[in-house]
Image (tube, rainbow, N blue to C red; front, side, top):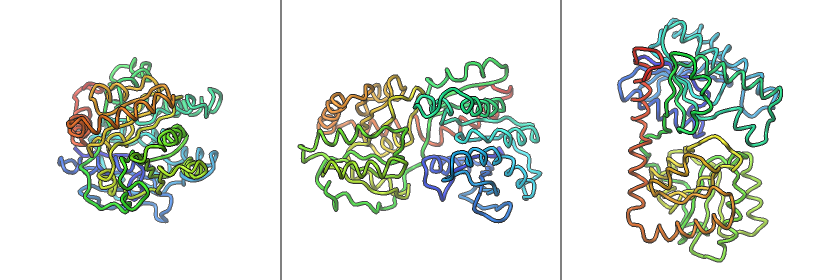
Length: 402
């Protein structure tokens, strides 16, 4: 198939979304499909730039800046983004290209007008990969009420849903957000698991044996450190375990809370905690090879279901998981059913401490733990499965039918 993939993150960015889309692009090419990734490019001067990327094409289209700017400017820029991309697509060599399917990745929620235009021009089906149910999660977190601003973003999101023939959600628990959307004929909703490609072999610049954590059983957290993660309880956990010289905590990444968390650890004199800045995603497998368990953290105020990309990277590397997440999240049941770690849904430090000690014992005594983690990844989260599923949905004879 000839497929257009629309997103707002891609290498050289290092976000988890950029890594996911990189891996998906490579797999589409490996499976023999002709893929073109359409991306906004605020820093380039020319209207368009066409690149080759591991067997696929990447078309970068000049558009307003939407990252690292003020809230109001960002909202206006995101509104303008799809129209700028569409205008500059018309100036590119792919202006008259017709597609067999249009796929797009949310976040952002603002791609709807571009998707609608390509879908209509090509007479093809569209597939929305939704990883972020916004603005619902912002309401859950107390970042937004259900006033005028919420209604604005909700309208944008619902328009995005309206131009999708198929929506792929992360977990079965997210189906409830789309009941009204499903009431329209010709629409199909399915669970599309997160995915990752095979790990790289790059040596990691972080050497645990050269830090104060040398010789300890290391719990690693790698990824975004922001309000959505609710990570303060992890410092409380490190504090509770400071008397155990065999246990340490390694935090790697960036985010709105990263500097504050690092300063808090220093203020509390936590000598079992080490922070590092974000590293190249290809260094992550070698980082995990030096650790013993991975940490997943989600703020307990979340109500949506989320299987973070970091969970995949942990189990792909054979690391069991210590999770502190919102109650009822589908991820909790998966961890328990598959016996790949311990999960706390109460956000209570005493329970999290008990579960951490249970996981430490499990690491010592359960010889099949690492193999179960790797097997779960291969069965549910290998990137080849995601491409096969998307192509099947786009190829269905009747719109919206699996």
